Image 1: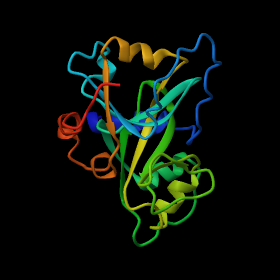
Image 2 (image 1 turned 120 degrees about the vertical axis):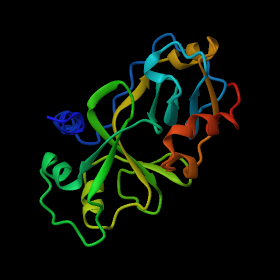
Image 3 (image 1 turned 45 degrees about the horizontal axis):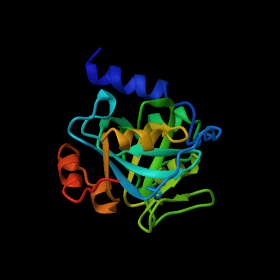
Length: 209
């Protein structure tokens, strides 16, 4: 079996839990937060010690005293046929004329790789859509895939498997070690398909927290 076919099947096998937001950890011993970085890019510094995040750019969807949640936007994994993805989530709607034939699956982070998240532009929203910025949103149920299949979904999107999550005070500690820097999240860079240069481009506008 070819390597890309193995990757595709492994991704589909692990994608059984559709768009479920993780529960924040209980707040214990929370450090003070200078400001929320929700709606920012979280950008790994060149000496990032964790290999899972080296040269990563994340869109931070949530940052509060009880923890933080983000999705990596520059780590594509494989192209998956939309029909296979629909079958995985027990979706029977027939694809529309404008539906994509394949969906790019991205590595969203190391936590719970069986979960899927759709990071997308705000030209399409529904009840339960999580607005990250004026131009970036995240949808939290499988109707987003139904919309894509009908050719009615968002114009720009990233289908992410897994997420990055931090408990109370954890991300603040990582900033203290100098692991990260931030920049305002931009839709143009988030959904740009030139993933190999996203990290360098995001760093041009980065600042320390």
